[in-house]
Amino acid sequence: MGRFGNQLDQLLGSIHFAIRLNRTLVLPPFLEYPYGFVKVEPKPFENIFKIEPFQDVLPVISMEEFMDDIAPDIWPNSKRYVFCHRPRTSPIAPNSPAGCHSKEGNPFGVFWDHFGVDFVEDKYFGDIGLALDDRNVEKWIKFSEKYPVLAFTSPPAGFPSPSQYHQYQKYLEWNDDILAEAENFIKLHLSRPFVAVHLRNNVDWEQACTHVNPNHHFFASAQCTGEDFEVTVPSKEICFPNRNTVIASIKEVVDDVGAKSIFVFSDKDHMISELYKEFGRKVAVRKLAQPDPYVSLAIAGLSDHFIANCMSTFSAITVRQRRYQCESPKSTSFFGLNLTKPIKNLEL
Image (cartoon, rainbow, N blue to C red; front, side):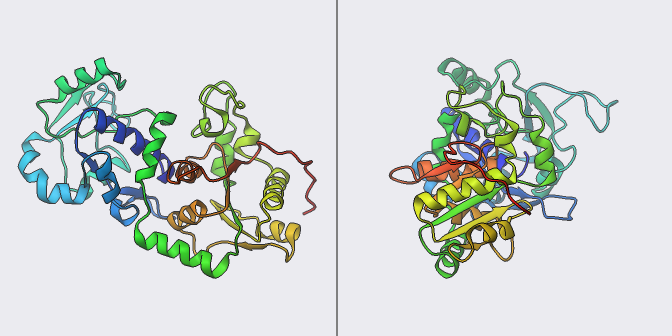
């Protein structure tokens, strides 16, 4: 499942799957990973996004409403099957029979236990696969027609999602509370035009970027390299740009748009002191007093320009929002790309 960016990417594929099979999509809670907590915490879908916009593309229902009002009738305890690709050996109990092992570990066990769900039997769809061409959709419909509910061990879609699924981002509208908080922060702390910046610089991300291969996509890399690498190829520098590149990229955009302020959100270091050193009092630099991933993304979506991390599925949320939720795409750039001015070394 991963964290929020990965979960949202997988949701796009699930939306497409439900549309192709003409099914109602049960919108699950998102799983938060609170700092210092061992277990994930489910956060209801409607606490982050509005549900109503989805009605334009497919029927949906929240997981909470489904379990309370629908499941007792069409998904009784005795018919709670779980679907996975093929039986596998349990990583926790290797001597147990092969199966889906749908509730093993965190977050899987936590998720299903949150709704009091236990499965009575595993079902396998490996012979069909997840391709959604017309012929395979017919196979899926025939295979699943006797099951009113399809509960999967993992999303029924590949990761990362292909670009043709990204259009579904336009139905993911922030709920009123998140949007109001974002708009209020902009009103109080940011002067337009303002640039939003997403920095990935925590040690776990740095380590992940060592695995970038120029011949393969890495997380959300296709958003800046192109699906067939027609723009560029993935690289560690694009994934984890050095501090000189970060400052140079921000300065170039600030100069180009005549920005009066910068909003920064990060998984670790917001580089506030370096940005103040670069811009002085000419450009205000701001971040949230208390980190909030949803409000940060909402602010970035409302910015006059957004600088994203190419590989980050978290950045990709705002990239898609700016591309598909507006009448015309809003300006976005990526660290390590399209830099036309010389990079100067930082003196720290």
